[in-house]
Each structure stands twice: as C-alpha cells, then as structure tokens.
Length: 116
Image (cartoon, rainbow, N blue to C red; front, top):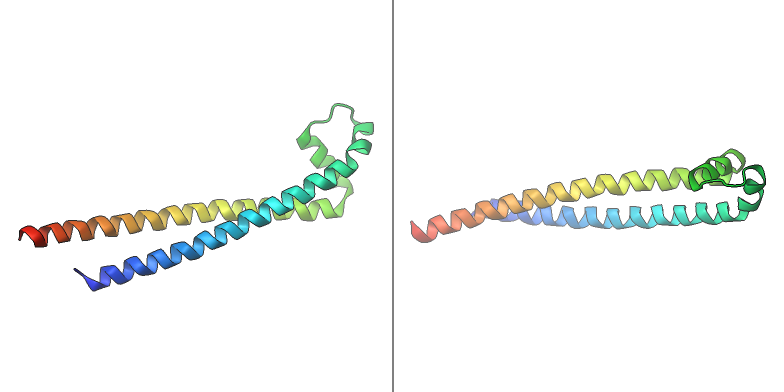
C-alpha cells in the first residue's frame, strides 16, 4: 500500500476535523447573534407595533435596524457567521469527497495486489 496516500488521507482527515471545529464555532456564534437580535427585537416590539400594527418579522427587524446600533451589530454577526458556516459545510463536503476518492483508490489497488 502506498504510504504517500495514507499520509494524504491522514492529512485530509485532520484538516476536516479542523474545519468541523470552525463550522461548530461559526454555528454557535451565528445562533448567539440571532438570539441577541431576537431578544432586542422583543424589547422594542411594542413601540414598533405602535408604528405598524401587523408588522411581520422581517419588517420588524428592518425597523429595529433603523433605530438600534446594537441591532446592526447582531444582525451583521448573524449574517457573517451564517455564511461562514455554510461555506465551511462546502469545504467539509469537498474534503469528504476527496477522502472517499482516495479510499476507493486504495481499495482498488489492494484488490489488484491480492489478485495480481
């Protein structure tokens, strides 16, 4: 069996673990920002409803963003970390595909060695 392929597989697996940790961290930060934004929205919902009685969630958030600097910070963090973890998902999938391809190749080579 090719030691180079084993090393490559090990390196990819290690990188995938690192990416998974980054993914988890980004998810936690996105959720934290979303919860803080929602709590801030709830605190201002009464005054927002005075302006617009049947306000939807998206419009309420927009109205909150107009009046609260802190809401802008939470909204930005939520969007940033959401797109970060979605990008990390794609990288993790790509690493998994590469790992699977190497494993398939190694299996094919091993079968050839057994019958050759």
